[in-house]
Image (cartoon, rainbow, N blue to C red; front, side):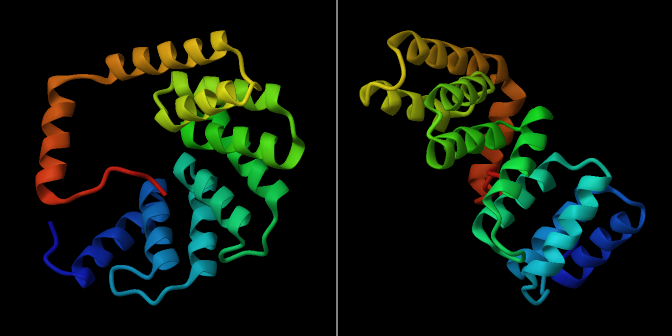
Length: 183
């Protein structure tokens, strides 16, 4: 492991030169948020996210969606954000699937379609989607059966992901103060 930002940046750039999509995405994040001693440059971050997408990064698709949704590093374009979320969701990103559900409610008023997105995301282990369906049920726009399906799907996904090795890694991350969240 590198001891300083300059060494870490050199390692990342070596992987970027080999067209490693995860390294390109990571470097994009460093520019986007101004980390590893780099000056914050959201536009450069978006450029790197776009390159990472070309080489196969689903995380970069999600982050491009966020950038367009918030208008950070690019001109705000909610419809374009939804396109990126959709592409990432089709490749298995539960966060993007959840965002599509939010988009359906906020910009299209399509609660049925939103619930379908939230159900898929919940079954992929995304807890916030379960909570959203619960709130939709309380508001009368989702059924009790849909809420039960989301809850069971989430519980099944959580059970599938349990393992001794994952528990050890999680404990190690917590003891080192490392977050495991994306974007």
